[in-house]
Image (cartoon, rainbow, N blue to C red; front, side, top):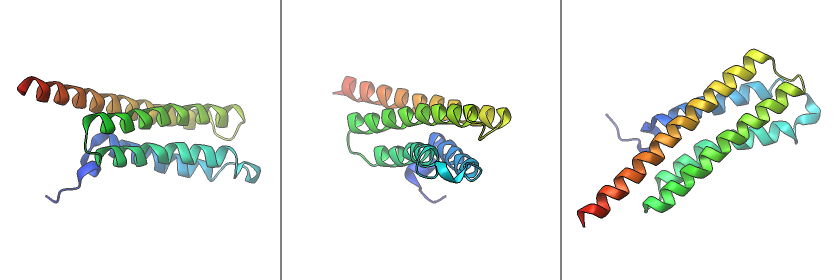
Length: 128
C-alpha cells in the first residue's frame, strides 16, 4: 500500500466527504449569495481539509494540534452556515440534517486525533 500521510486519516477522509457535500449544496443557492453565504460555507468546509493537511505536515505536536483545533472550529463554522442556508430556505431539512451529521462525525474524528496527539506527546515526555 502506498503511503499517503494525512490522506490516510479517517478525519481527513470524512472532512473531504463533507467538503464535497457542501460544494454540491451551494450549487442550489441563489446567485446573489455567490460572494456571501456560498463563499463563506465553501471556505469553511475547505478550511477543514486544508488545516488537517497542514497540521499533519507540521513538525511539533503543538503545531499539529493547533491546526487540528482550527480545523475543528471550521467544522462548527460550516454547521452555522448550514443553519443559515436552512433559515433562508436554500436547503431543506433533510439536507441540513445530513450536513449536520457529516459535521458532527468530522468534529468527533478530529477530537479523536487531537486526543491521540495528546497521548503521544505525554508518552514521549514520560520516556525521557
